[in-house]
Length: 258
Image 1: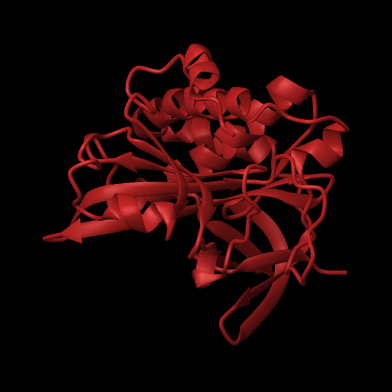
Image 2: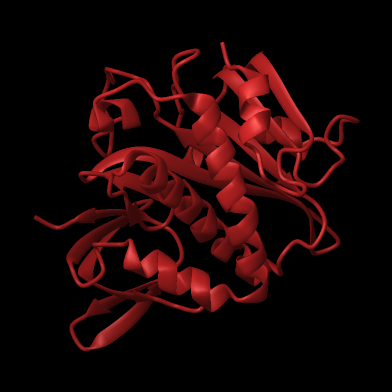
C-alpha cells in the first residue's frame, strides 16, 4: 500500500499535491480531474490511483499497470495556465521533471523521447498525457497525466516501444512515496519556469534527448515519413529535416530508422 505519511514528509511544494487524493481503483485519473466534481476544484490537486480501469496513453492507447507496483497519477492545473501554444512546453517540462527525479534518486541516466516519453537504456519507463477542457476558446483546466513503471518486473504483451521499470534498471525495489514526492517537487519548480522562461525548458529538454541529429521515422495515422531529427521549435514541436527542407511535426510516433 502507498504510505501517504511517508509521501507527505518528503513533499516540498507550495500548491502541487497539497490537495492529494488516493484511490484504489478508478476509471481514469485524467477523466476524473477533467470533470467538475467538488473534489477537483483546486489547482495543483493530485489524484493517484493504484488501478485504472480505463487508463490511457496517447491516441487512446490502453495503459495497463498492475496494482501497487507503479505510479499512475494526474495533476490538475486551473490557475495561471500557459497560453494554448505553450501547453506543449508543460508537456516537455513534465517529462523533464520525471527524468530529473529518476536521475537524482537512483543515479540512472534517463533520456527523453519526443513528444512525451522517458526512457532508460532506450526502453520506455514513463509516459505523459496532457488533456484540456476548453471554454470559449480558453483553456479552463489542464490535466497532466503521468504513468511511471516503478516496481513492475515483467511486461507481457506487444508494445510499440520496449518497456522497462526503474526497479529493473536500478536492481532494487523503489520506494514509490519518495519518487512521487520528488517528481511533484520538481514539477512545481519546472512549471514556474515553463511559464516564465520556456526557453530554459526547451534547452534542458534537448540536453536529455539523445535522438536529436539521428535519422528517425515518424508514424502519424496512415502517414509514415523519415528524416533527420533536426531540433524542436519554440513551442516544442519537432523539426524534421528531409533533404534540404525542414518540416514541423506536431504529432506522431517517433522511432529510430534502422
